Image 1 (cartoon, rainbow, N blue to C red):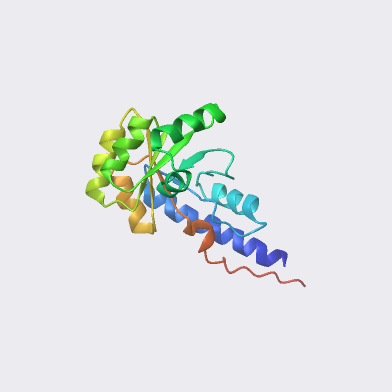
Image 2: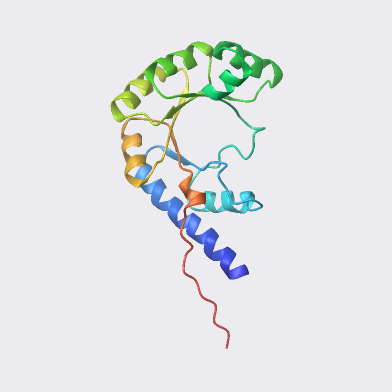
Length: 177
């Protein structure tokens, strides 16, 4: 059982190292898409591979998505202001899937703008809009080529769920004499 765990965690670290290399100079973030009960271990494996741990839980960064706004019946600026009031010092990230969404996130005062499933031209323009105003994070089905393309657009971070939910186990063996 221990060997299986070490194989899994080593696979995560190895895959992360590949993504980190492909994403230079952007930093590679993990996500909360982890195996139940294994989050701390899998995130440590990401760190061992050179990745950056991101959002250990729902408590360490507010993420505002369009679904949240629809369910809450509140506009984006009000949601960001409420987060700042109720959770002082906690960074606020706003998801945007187009340039209009990026502008709204910036106008609302987001600390970070999550560029979700954007094409390269839009990502480049979003990075220019955010320069000096907010940190940028690209996301959405990122593979090795995708992180390289996003990094070339100038994003600060690329989030990759595959680091933990799709990493192949490293083939390890233990022989005793």
